[in-house]
Each structure stands twice: as structure tokens, then as C-alpha cells.
Amino acid sequence: MATHGSTHAPEEGQHVPHVVSAGTYFLVYVILLVLLVLTVVVSRFDLGALNIIVALLVAVAKTSLVILIFMGVKWASRLAWIWSVFGFIWLLVLFGTLGDYITREWVHLPMGW
Image (cartoon, rainbow, N blue to C red; front, side):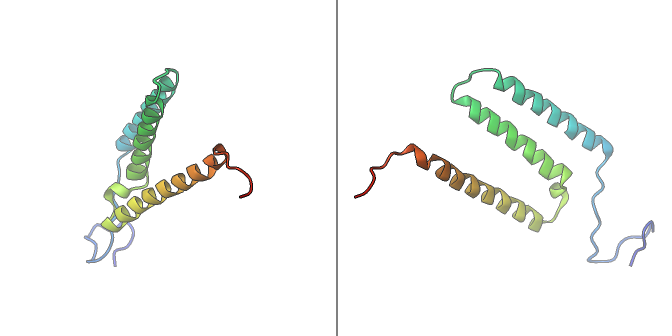
């Protein structure tokens, strides 16, 4: 078993963590700031039905960067990728049911039979 700071190769089956450079983190930080500014700028314009689409696309881009780089999923195993995809699917299910719950008051049903 390798000790901390040793220079020899890890044994078979041992996980070697991926080291991300500070430059990569800084680049992702700058991209996230640009996407934040884009979100604010787009919110100032009336694009009609495209407002929500653009806002969601920018949000998905920001979320993807955070998950891939900061959470390390980009360099993780296939199992981590699968769980990440399942997490997104579960999030979609939650938003779908929340939308149903919030809009129930919009339909006026007659009381009684």
C-alpha cells in the first residue's frame, strides 16, 4: 500500500484521484461569471416565450459545469456518471410533480356532484 507522498505506482485496484489544475478552476469560474452576466442581461429583454428557454439553457450549462468540474464527475467512474444522470431524471420528476401541485388551483371545479 502506498503511503502519502510516495513516488511509486499505486497497486492494482487502488483509486488514483484526478488532480485538476488551478487554471482549470479559474477558467470554469470565469465561464460561470460570464454565464451569470448573460442571465442578467437576457432577463432585461422581453423575448416572449424564449425568456424561459434561454434562462433554462444557461442554468443547465452552469449546473453542468459545476457537476462536471467542481464535483469531479468528469473524471469519475461510469457508476458516478450513471448516478448523476439518475439525479437529473429525479430532479425532472420532482419539478414535474411540483408543477402539477402548484397549478391545481387554476382549474375551477364545481363543488359536489
